[in-house]
Length: 163
Image (tube, rainbow, N blue to C red; front, side, top):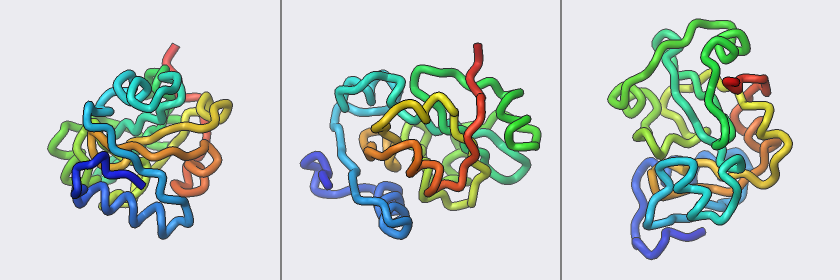
C-alpha cells in the first residue's frame, strides 16, 4: 500500500480500502499525486495502456446508482447498458454522484459505495489483465483483474461499448 507520501488518505479512500479487505482483495491502492482523474491520466501514471483503466461511470437508475465499469478506451452506449441492467438510466450530476456513492467524479471506485449499486462490466475488460480502477479519489487507483471486479461487484459482463 502506498499513500503517495501524503501521510493521510481521504475517508472515501479508506472506505475503498475497507471494502477491498472485506471482499478478500489485497490492498493494492496506490496514490499518484499528479492525479488519475481521467483514463488517460491514470494510464500515464500507472504506465499501462488506457484500455486497462476500468472507468466507473455513474448513471441514475431511479434513486439507485448504476455503475458501468468500462475500459478506459471505450465510451458507454447507454441503450446497451439499459438492456443489460433491465432498467432506464438517466444522467447523474456531480452532486448526486457524491451524495449517493460517496465518491467525487474522477475518483468513483467500483467498490465501497454508500448506496448498493446496480453494476455492469464492459466485456472488453475481460481480455485485459491486470486492470486499474479508481480507489476513492482523483489520485488513487488499485490494481485488480476483471474476474475480481466481477466477483467483488456482482456485475454482469455485457457489450456496452458505443461504436
